[in-house]
Image (cartoon, rainbow, N blue to C red; front, side):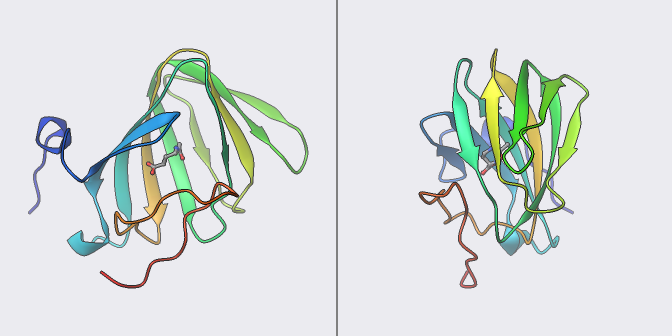
Length: 129
Ligand code: 9YT
């Protein structure tokens, strides 16, 4: 059984900050669940280009509002508390936050915690622990 709280993660190596977001990793590959599980805040007024070529991600918004635009077709979907989106086709996208958005994110395969977004907005596939 694993029990963790956000308070325990904030300020540790599992609290990863980027220019437009902060991601608190509640579960990582080493936890053996087959997915990683993150509590992410996307900062108000920002746009983030993301293209997870090596991972599938499902995202559930539990606070704030913004939108996601899929690059392939230019479609824009609003995001607010209660909206889920799943990048089931490794969809390249732009994530825009109107207010701070709090997103619960699940990654398959799980992140190890070492990844950072590359210039294309992707995380590399990290095999090593
Ligand atoms: C929603 C999203 O993909 N944000 C970027 C950060 C990423 N989710 C992460 O590492 O938690």
